[in-house]
Image (tube, rainbow, N blue to C red; front, side, top):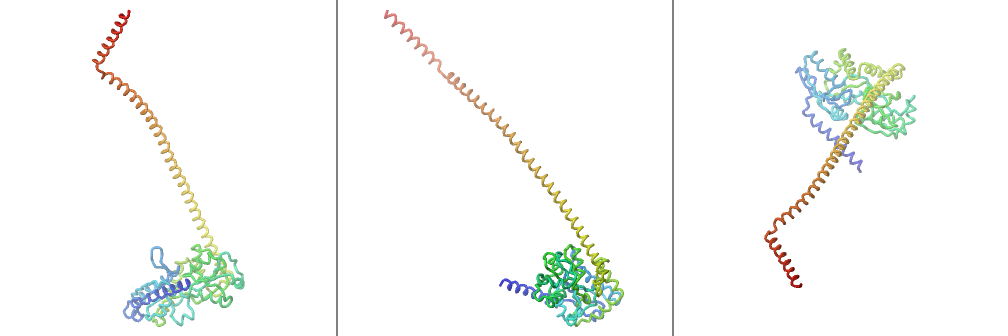
Length: 416
């Protein structure tokens, strides 16, 4: 019941997002090529979804990537060749699936979709493609704990204990489903939102595998994702390209621009900008038919992989060393703080003890002084009492005593 509710919620959210973006199509500025050519200016809409290095937002919030630069370079060509001022309105489509669905259903000719779309015969029936700007080679990735397979059969024999990660409605999913269909129908397939989530899932789960483009795999290694490339069941297609509505009139001018020597040189520079010159040559060279079956090409790729992994390990080691240094420094500082705190407490304790003894001494002195004062008070009271006695009383008392003494003497004489 819970799974059904979650599935329903997910589908509802997907429908909402798609319908929301579809509702915005009415306000999209997506001029036809005929209008742009006639007016010498115009606007087209480019839909995109984040995937590095193809198209993504950098740390400063700036849109960039291979496909962004390719599309933006069209403006310069049209300006120089036809004196046309083109504006490109970039819209985040929120998901890979949304782009293709929106472009496919759009009635506006000036809509483009960019998110490393593979050219396939099935898609050609639904949308138009720009010429490919980059080779399309999907490589099979496994968890690092898996050995390097010498043949596809070694992988096939282990499918019953493995699970596959992939991304919905992609050629990578198509490759996984082909393995499921041809070799193991009960294969467990788990979907993720993008290629880097797929790589991370494979890195975190033993007995797992999946397909990703070679360029994404290389970037994943550079990001420190620990996975292993298997040189079996490699999948090649015509190339990565932008997608356009089937009724677009922009296809001829895009074909014209992509076929120029200027674009050929520029495309290599753009890919090199995001992958590096060596990796660009590697991707283009490895994507040629049977290139990875060529010992030299495969060794070049393996060598580059080792360099990336070694570099990443050095970076990880440096980071770990820096973390240890920071930890030790923090530990020392913490110990110093504790020592200082204890010293302060001890000083306060000793000061309080000294103050207590001083107060005790003073209290003893005060007690003695109090006793002395009380004794003096008693003596003073006696003196005051004595001083207060009536002198006449004393005189009369003495006379009385004298009288009785005299009287007693008379009695003695009479008795004689």
